[in-house]
View 1: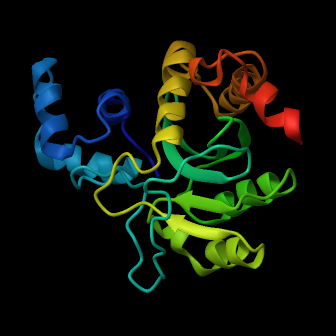
View 2: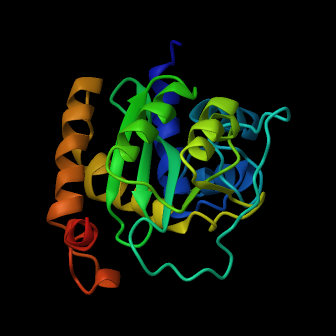
Amino acid sequence: MSIKEEELEIMKRIDKIYTDCPFYGVRRITEELKRQGNNYNHKRIWRLMRLMGIQAIYPKRNLSKQNKEHLVYPYLLKGVKISVNNQVWSSDITYLPLYQDFIYLVAVIDWFSRFLLSWEISNRLDVHFCLAALDKALRQGKPQIFNTDQGSQFTSISFTEKVINNKIQMSMDSKGRALDNIFIERFWRSLKYEDIYLRDYQTVHELEKGLDEYFKFYNFRRPHQALGYKTPAEVYLKNI
């Protein structure tokens, strides 16, 4: 799909606003852009947000609409104490800007250790790159619970059957709950502010190489306050 350079720039601005305020819908993002001196029509912002995969429904972000024919599983993590590795994994998709293009990234993360288990990129919002990331993650272990949003990639039969057939409980964010998948939401924010917005990648090849370097840094060198200033790898690989 050919996107005008001007609109790619608007999408980058939308992404920065949404990274800071994941509960903003189309009207709030339009107003924030106006405050920054950009007087765009809200219908245009709505169209670009749909292209980016940001669902303009307060307060939940979702990178694709739910397919009504797909089964939605209940959210299993309310009030649950996350105390060990491989208790809960979660997956999500985010939009990443490039110089004259954009790409989608899916990742799988362990909640307890914050360890990034796998990732894949794609120029299409389909289930295939999500399945590839899930397969890579399952080569390293298996969680008790796997949590996602209600996007059509994750509610698809091919995705849910792979989870269930591995004897893993499927959990999905409640509709309208932006913070049900909070750990991976925080991970996206770290990735974008510590790498994507700083590097301003020009091509998919540069982005892929940069992501690989950042994720190694994130897993093996970046200490987390919530982990007692240990790295995700020090916590996750300790008991593998």
